[in-house]
Image 1 (tube, rainbow over the protein chains, first blue to last red):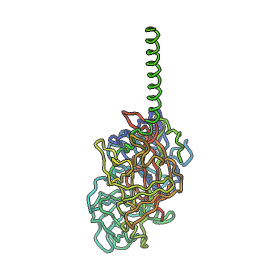
Image 2 (image 1 turned 60 degrees about the vertical axis):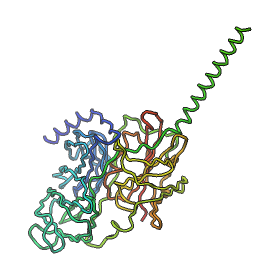
Image 3 (image 1 turned 135 degrees about the vertical axis):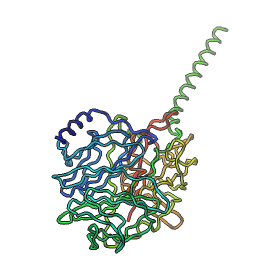
Image 4 (image 1 turned 90 degrees about the vertical axis):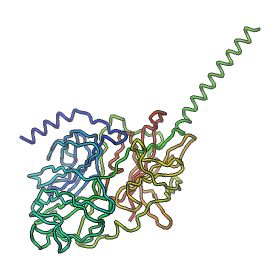
Length: 265
Length: 184
């Protein structure tokens, strides 16, 4: 029933036109999509009935899409199959903010998890968070090798808050919550100062595709497209008009002079 | 390549589809630990042999309308200081003039670039080469700003200039965006 309702919502929204993105970028929100459903096929992502991402496979993270702030219906469909909706959701997005929408869970229980990404940066620091999107993994801690957890007791579907770390290279490990054995060792994780990151734990502990962790930089410093012309090339075209006008003017003046001479004669 | 007479899609056209941001797969093997930090630099010189560009690069920020800036000198190219450095993970963004009041400027032929052609950024002895992977033309209001300015795990270069009909009040109608990927 829920799916039917969102489908009806989609139909209603499909008739609404997408408002053009503002030129200076002030009213835009930025949204990206992650395919984290281990057994789902490659998908297309539709925003208000229009295709926005094509052929995203498991593990694919898109660039941020630029959308005017507002309410949207996001639908995920099998790649190339516009008729079937795998899962859909409504998203409200605010101007100047960044979001990640992730398709998570096994196909039978697929859902969309939406989160806001931090785009406020600190010099020399990295803000990092962890998203647990591995459906069969237990609750986990993420810690420096052998150290105390930086992120504790994250269950499937949980997204941690951002923690602030000094920029640098870290050897991290994913452990079952409260335990010391290692689910996954992550050596040489390089975090650049002034950037924020989300680490997405995806895949399956038992079976394929295997458990792994993706690191993605979040947010960004947005700007409008630059003004890169002063019309010099276009002026050559309008110059022809000026020239034509001048010729016409001269002809008219000539005619006047001609008339005057005639009258004088 | 975009033919000089080519037109951007209509203003009421559809959403621009986005590409992928290539997240880094973290693993226990020591992969490329250096890739984040080594030899990224603020670019000083841009060379695009196929369209005869050899230009000085100036760092730029945003203008009072919150748009990316472009150097006043129409023969120079602007590097967006809030974006990535040359060779770094993320988007390195460069803007250049199509023309000034007198005629063609440094990026007049940007739209003639073809896929696979080479673009290099330099600062003294440091050089990084990129390969053109897309040449697109958009109406100003359809430019995929987030693909250009927001974070990505890809090592990309974005070159922007104006195109299309000129209106003294609103400037050029279109923008050309050339995307290139760092060669490994």
